[in-house]
Length: 303
View 1 (cartoon, rainbow, N blue to C red):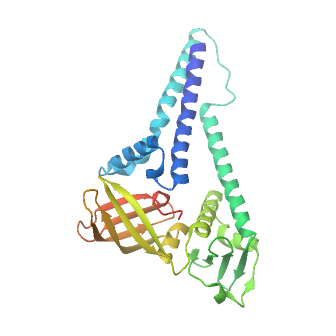
View 2 (cartoon, rainbow, N blue to C red):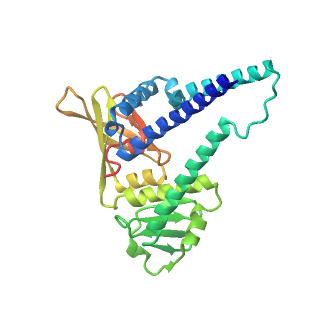
View 3 (tube, one colour):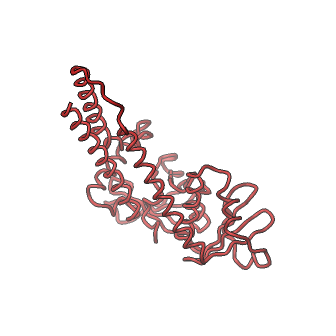
């Protein structure tokens, strides 16, 4: 019975260690803004995941690969439970219900992570809100930030969609509103997690969006020594990071390791939300996907 308990605890420890590994990888990418800037061991894992993602059909399920960090611990934990149960049955001992299973512990850990994420967003949002204005029109409400580049995020109340590109002087004469009114219209009437995700998009836009007259240049390594570079307007970039979603055609430069000159190709850029961006060829190999990655994996996201 003791052996089974020891094995079960070892399995739980391995699962926790696996969770720490996943968190380390994700935080490394988020902090550096690119796989290429992360520690070498993280880059090896990223290269492995990308190589699998290139396989037709199978590539759509690469998220399952992350289970490799948790499966060994889970199997060992289950083995420990089985050994302990068999020992109890053999000795005629009826085990009393445990106070909490490993699953309960994982759920509690996950919930604590969510609470920490929400608290961090609330602190960031509060800091931005202190130096911002809320202005309301008949069917729109505007969040006018004085942080960073003084960007304005309008909200279409009827269509529940962000409005971008508004100039502050065009809002002169409208009535000031309150943060509570803004939060009620923008974040109300939806699940709490969805509301916080929308709040995060607003924060990302305020901190990393660009003014109307600027362009954003982004780069991405796509394997085999190739790199892609492209520039997008403020409207496209801001729409991506605030979560409006876009689908447009742009020209991209493709650099190859063994060539000094670049190829210029017409590509299709699409993003359904703020977390994922996809670039496909329009000219040449039509429909060929150059890459699909998290927006924060693009070199240039934070600059």
